[in-house]
Length: 245
Image 1 (cartoon, helix red, strand yellow):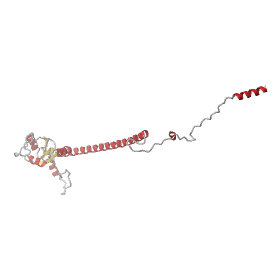
Image 2 (cartoon, one colour):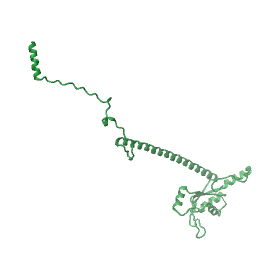
Image 3 (cartoon, one colour):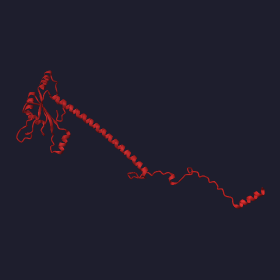
Image 4 (cartoon, one colour):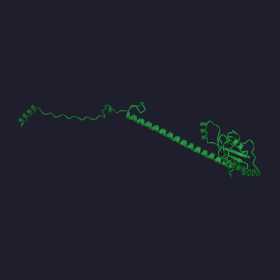
């Protein structure tokens, strides 16, 4: 397995196991035991854990879980330590009895070592996992990786949806603002709220006093006033009537 966690193709040709070899492999796996370490001292790497555990028995595989990416980013940003830190780990012993005895013996005990060593005063916190095999750990890691990938997909989809809604609201606000400016120009004058000149508003001819002959109202014809008869004309009329009658 490579350092980045990917199991690439091997250069050697893998031959299929014979029934006897497969039975022997299963028997060896049944004899193994796994110890869980709930806390890894800062700066301790898998090679160091293997070296320390090998002093008590034959060690098979060792896996240490790296800290969360966000936590690692904050630690590297605000502290001087730039190395990778691990939070928990699993150690496989070839003999389950050795694994059980190691967990009972070292739990809550100082790591020790030479005087002045880095982890001399740190304390082991470990537990033996009965009926737990290494393939269960790999399945658990694969399951957690799949769950994490699903969560990332959901968060990415949610962020894209929020981005589309935001852009839609921005466009709607721009259109409404433009309509409000046009309305303000129609009510207040030739300049809008932003001070830009706009087209002059059309004014009807009635406001200027220019009235076309077609639309002008027809004036009523004035009737001639009746004039009162003069005194001389009345006298002549009376004389004429008197001569006739």
